[in-house]
Amino acid sequence: MLVDCGWDTADTLEALEGHTRALDIQLGDIRHLVITHIHPDHYGLAGRLREMSKAELSFHRLERLYIESRYANADGLLGEMHEWLRLNGTPADELDKLNFGSMGILNRVRIAFPDHTLDGGEEIPCGRFAFRVIWTPGHSAGHVCLYDERHKILLSGDHVLPHITPSVGLHVRSPSNPLADYMDSLVLIGRLEAELVMPGHGEPFQGLPERTDALLAHHERRLVEIVELLGARPGLSMTGYEIASRMNWSSRRTWDDLSGFERRLAVTEALAHIELLHDRGQVRKSFADGEIKYFVPDPATV
Ligand SMILES: [Zn+2]
Ligand SMILES: [Zn+2]
Image (cartoon, rainbow, N blue to C red; front, side):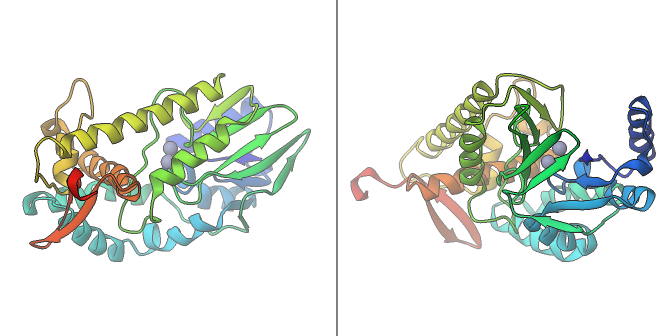
């Protein structure tokens, strides 16, 4: 069984072949390919691998829904995303830069539809291991982690990473409140008694509850940062783009240093936080002059 497979590029395939050779098996021996979520760096090679190995492919049913719009019919999504970025305050001269920022990845994905869709709760046997599928929406709507309870091993995909904060963004076809989903999923996963976490990026690590706590604390700080920005003076209201451009994204780089793709990620991440604040009643939303704006409610009216 292989969990996640990387981009559809020659060097990814070569690296994977090297790793399987070291285990004394060939790519053709893979019988089951499980994908934690269909981001191109986890799923891109799935179509090619299935041709090479006849492996059965499994991923969550919600990820299956996104294949069509993300990869097979990307033009429709681009049009919707363009309008949505505009509604959220992206300046006209930046719209194309933000919208097309992720198009380069399309040629690194060979799509494949799953043989089995997962819902969470299934047990996937693999030799002396048995992995339970845990649905962990947030980073992606149908993200799953795999947990072997007996060996206390968690395959965490992009849900929990050792050094970087997984991106959680609200975009045009997101579920309603992805950051709330993500934080709930962190609490759920943080309760596991995993002794070893094998993430989708970086080295295996220990200390799962400390890491999930740190990620939760990071998002709470971001929520406070936004409330402070919006509450700087009475009557202030800002679009998602304006809020994103005033948030802190890096200790070394300013908003001007960010590429179109990075700015788009920043806008979607800011909006995920704003949506959660909106849900908690800490931020309100208005529609004026063709744009969505956010503000902190006047304490006298709460
Ligand atoms: Zn991802
Ligand atoms: Zn990833």
